[in-house]
Image (tube, rainbow, N blue to C red; front, side):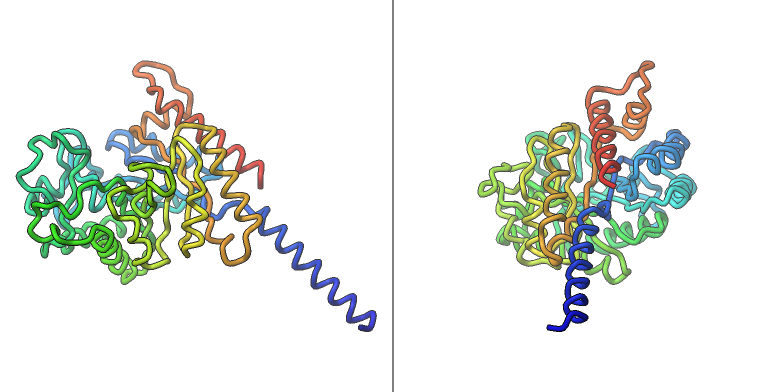
Length: 361
């Protein structure tokens, strides 16, 4: 090999090494925060927080849970109390645009159709869609209600809600929830009772995905029902022990998985990446868990090959308290009514996590 060619080969090798190092040092593509939608009188506080705090912290994605707390014009019968108007949401959209933040609306589908004694808008207005109609009076004895994914009239309404919410949010993606689904293929449901749970769960994933894809929007979702809770040891909440995990083999790979774990840092995000999905870790209020997940995410991005590493997108900090509670905890407000312990812990974890991410950049 002549000297000129040798120098060219060495230069190329050095460039490849530099590219690999720079890729490992890049900030995560997604640095996200998950909040509930504010109440109407809290919109100014939310706008302030988006404009002031999110750019400062380095947040570039805001997943906001609306569910039925938006004044849907297409189906006003499903609207719950404290619903935001179109003008309210437009103010949030404008704040996100000014802050350089991608807004992704969340509406819980399939499961989480109730909480405690309250049944939410869809099943309250359309009890015929309930997977267990007439059972569990006042929702006693269950975690949350589910809708029947095989009801012939269901998806017309669900699609209308998805389209309207995505449109008002000017969103290129929608988070459809689908976590903690414990009621599925109920033995008393005339449509679902003989169905395999994994196939049924996968069918609903595909149905929602295909509709969103037809409108050029990504589908995001929680990942717990696609993890075998027994094999991984994460249990029946952060994983599935009711037969849905096999659905991971039956669904499109362009769905973004939000892999939530709150008490430990399992290597499940890497599992999703190997399976072909883009994935985020989603911690909550234990700072050591959030840092463990951050280390795992960073390690795979740094050491995996160019096929796997880009699928590890980053983090989505969850909050699971009212929007104003989290924001007041973030600002350190202590006046009564002071934010509760969970809000303060989530805010502390959020600050610690994003401070570490900024230091990486």
